[in-house]
Image (tube, rainbow, N blue to C red; front, side, top):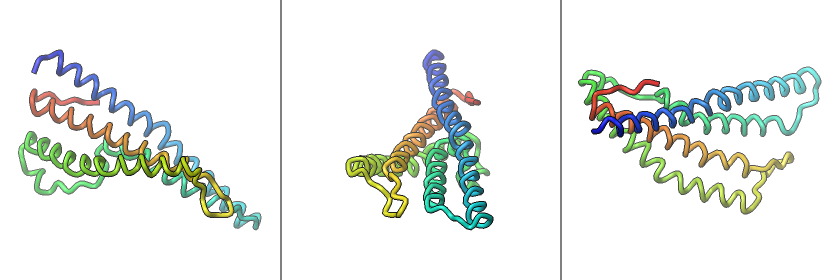
Length: 178
């Protein structure tokens, strides 16, 4: 493979990695503080002031869902998803990388192939109907549902980055480090 193409692919994968690191460091991490803040507010108002708020449980659930969805690509970037590598760890490194690539494409790729169009329809319907929660708080649900395809796109971005990195390693023997 020509060196210019390899360098272009390496630059592209680093760009893709930066997207998920940025989202993870600035949105996912700070969402945890927002979740903690709302939980502390709820505990104080419910236990100490005796005036629970109707909106806190719903907001906590929305923030947690947002955190989970936006962390999909970030978690894959750092390979923090659950993985069973008892048998593959005994294989040579190039075989491990090849199996990892096939597994990611087979499982994550197929998952994204099925879920991304479904999530887009799901979100479009929520926006078209102006969907709101069937609670007394009546919050707009379509905003949170928008994060479903966004989270899946972030996961897809990281899948592409990993497959490209693994492809470079398998063809040239060069490891792409962050």
